[in-house]
Image (cartoon, rainbow, N blue to C red):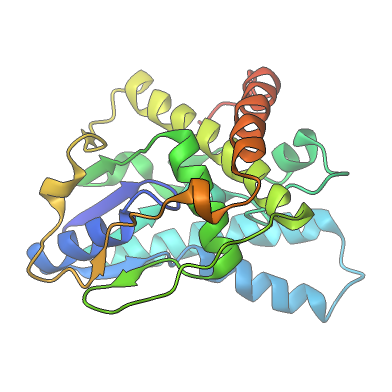
Length: 248
């Protein structure tokens, strides 16, 4: 029973890659199934606001373990593995939230909770930090994540606000964790296929219905230069403050 994981993050062409791998290998495409836990837990705790954070995180760990077990019991699948899938909640770092808060709600045990060592094939997919972070923020803001072939979609100009910077801070942190995950694989001698520089060769163009983004973000984001500099600055903050963060 084939099990394939694509270690990636948003705006790295991971959707095209997993879809192609699923079709070419006749596998079930589980896509971003791990994010379904976040949605379920979010709804549950909105109805139970007095539930403690420790209980929430314990539930999160249990659900992650159980979901992984069900995937491996079923077999014959391809799935995305993003660092943000291991965090409760994913995708944002608020102004008053410390990186320690994130660490306290992040699952580092990818051996026990993800069975990372039991995949038949792991692919590692990466893109330049600035390029992918800017693309992520624009897509989150506009909710335009993909362009369909032969279909015109207007690309509006945007102004950034505090929510956008909440999103970009987490994305930069996720980039750092993405690199740490790669180092973990190297340290533990877990085989993986590096496809960052040739990911196009893993995309089946016969089935691809979306196009690679060619957006000119310098003209689409009014604060582009400020955002670019902010990414550089916050990357250094994340590097300095995650030196003792390790996957196990």
